Length: 237
Image (cartoon, rainbow, N blue to C red; front, side):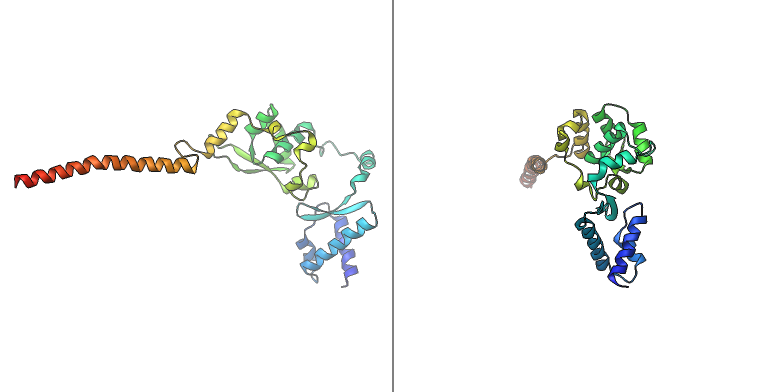
């Protein structure tokens, strides 16, 4: 199989796929090619679309590759294609999803504290869409569930990784705007530093030093008592 034929087959695969294709998936279909050759053909296609100013691009999304329309055509495509209500994310869902994306892993009480409203229904909705996942439990009172985003979240927003999330400053938002309330910050600090555990290395060393001094202080009188007993025994002899 020559490179041109391989390129056409890979391009056809991209056109029929409704999700990003991974290099290993393509390699599984075109067994005559190795990983390096598949990546070279993908780069070839991507450059060809860009150089010829096609209406679409080959973009890396969530670790795979997918053909997407160029964003410059969005205003016209929005008029032609309207997302159905079942698939569209509305304001509350987007707000909750944004908090999870930027603060993950994060708990339901923390999300509610930032938004100021109950998020039970919203969490259910975005979990059903597989945009968020349970990322474990927080080591604090009640061990609440932690939430994080999924690879489907990256696909939905056309991102290759969370590093591509827009900076908060672009929305005129700062870290302070999505900061946890003081009582939750204290709970988080306490969970990271259990009661009785030193918060800093220096505190731990200081506590250890004090304990040693106390042991020495207790040992001195005991030693003196032993010496006195020894001297008394010698006198009696």
